[in-house]
Image 1 (cartoon, rainbow, N blue to C red):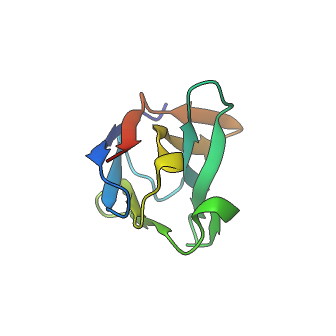
Image 2: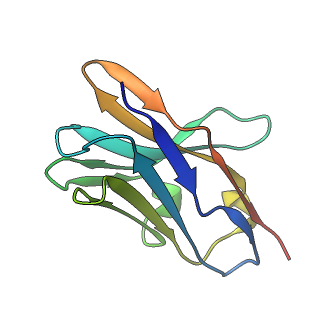
Length: 115
């Protein structure tokens, strides 16, 4: 069982930055893949970024060059640095861990980009 707790969401103006954190209940060293997803009102949940245990990253086209995912195995934490935020980035952001053919999810954190 993996428990995930997100933090760092909030209200930010267009062009601003936020850093989301996802703290896992145990070691993430052996978790093959962790990532961030988001879901805007009326839309399906979509992958934002993912990172493997070896450090390989993958990004949605809409966030490439603006968002950076990273993981700190010593702190059992995954981060999402979001820069140059746009109103279209407004959504609930969910942390995800995939291990043993099971997807684990956090409770989500709201990100609102608005002037």
